Image (cartoon, rainbow, N blue to C red; front, top):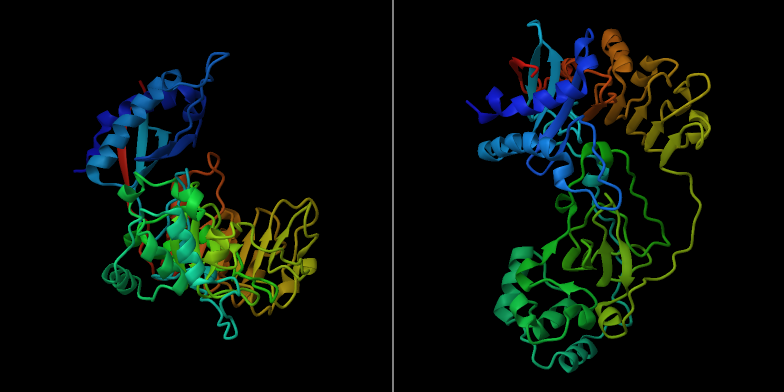
Length: 456
């Protein structure tokens, strides 16, 4: 039996939750829920602020840290990525019923919540931006600033004692990557192989090269698979690269060879699949906080290393109908205003007027994502008229209407349930999720383990 199923490790947390939510847990249908993983947790306990004049300390909330610590130890012992939980009053006076919800292959994990994340309706399906490959740019050539001899000469002058990689080491890296190193990147590693021990007697590599250089053995291709993008975020993005762009705004590319870091988690890469206004071998930066895109650093490695160019080039602003439309009371003023043939994502948020019809977007050939807040749709069954949807995210009430009417779109790849964190009981959301999964022939979410314990 999993050590997570030992009620003793949950008892301290149950005592804290009961003390903090006694009224809620005493009310009919009252519940509290949370999520715990080995590195983080989200539990509904009051935060105790630090004493005035000093920073917050673990000891300020020591009882919470101790209670959660017992559970994280059990997770690590079991090799588990995390567990969600729901606590309700039990039929035993003064008792609590603990529901443990473990991860499922039919859904992505919820983020800091016990509610299920995106339901995966087709095995291996990925959001459209993640599936997108770079467009060919047959006329792209290296920048005029690219100069292998100048780059090597400059590096040798700045790093006279550097150790370069051998041809055998470079060949091994190319074999591992599945792509030849472009001339400038090869030239760089012929001068300095990038091993950490080589920098002991050298100047700071950041000052010399303009980034934290990776050892040759740590180069990697930043394709789409290297950038983990959850469905609920990827489905809300759209890739748009215009003729004025030097970098294709992709999730990843088989032509992005990462060779360094900016010191803050953003990756520096050589780009072999540039945008229409870019150059083969240009240097780009791939942000660690975004889901798609990259920015231009320099037109070439020579430009970055020798000439110290790091700011890219200005890109003229071109107004086009947005591929992602956010309809709400402060942004796009209605579905009709959002509709155009290229629309890919429609998100309907807080709306203070009459509910909206989806008729203006019927038949749009590229509309693949719809998200809507509760009560914003005049007729949820209109969704069945959106025949190209891949991702649909709705509140429980709207899902109920679709399920009862047999109007759930048949082509969905993934689905989300817009649940309110503490108001909507995750157990009811899981039951609804299982109906949606069953409709698509998918296994239900992992069974829920129920433990009974005392409130104090």
